[in-house]
Amino acid sequence: MRQGRLFVISGPSGAGKGTICSELLKSEDLELSISMTTRAPRGKEVDGVSYYFVSHEEFQKTIDEGGLLEWAEIYNNRYGTPKAPVLKKLDAGKDVILEIEMQGAMQVKKNYPQCVLIFVLPPSLSELKKRLIARGTETPEQIELRTRTTLDEIKKIKDYSYFIINDDLSTALQDARTIIRAEHLRVDDRASEIIERYENEEV
Ligand code: 5GP
Image (cartoon, rainbow, N blue to C red; front, top):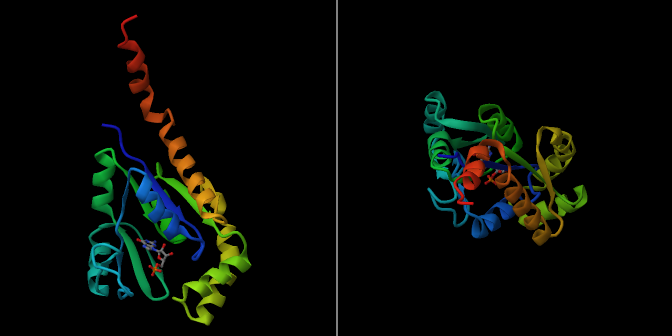
């Protein structure tokens, strides 16, 4: 059976990866990978839905057992993608989407080179700062630090296959759907399937 595609949505914090990802899940035939994290739940977050909330010990044990496709430490908390469920879905021909930060995206590229890396950019650095303030989940110091590191992160875009500038959400979503569609139209491993379609025709 043909493997599903692994779409990786990444990019600087606050560019809107989460919104793009959750909107895509509503309209596209995609399976979201639920990450594991050591950070505490916020607001209405539910264990097993937003994240698997685990202790540092449990996270470390999962790393030691080779159970993560990638992981990263961000501001003293760890985040990682459980490997087995992702591989199982891909093997079953389902497309999977990951919404992760950039260190993790590079590990996915290394561990699963067939993945499709999509970089989500803010319209500008000043707009990014405004969005982070509006989100209200970071302290002013954290916001300063994040906006300062964003340019360095943008300079790493060469490692990615596609980019989306998230200025207007509906345009950004259209771009994301176009990328998904284009990936489905790649010949790659589908050559024999396509040829068979015509070979089996009565003419
Ligand atoms: P938050 O704590 O706001 O939910 O997430 C912080 C950052 O962690 C976001 O940039 C998010 O994309 C990233 N993130 C969430 N899950 C994972 C994961 O499994 N692996 C990596 N590398 N980053 C993740």
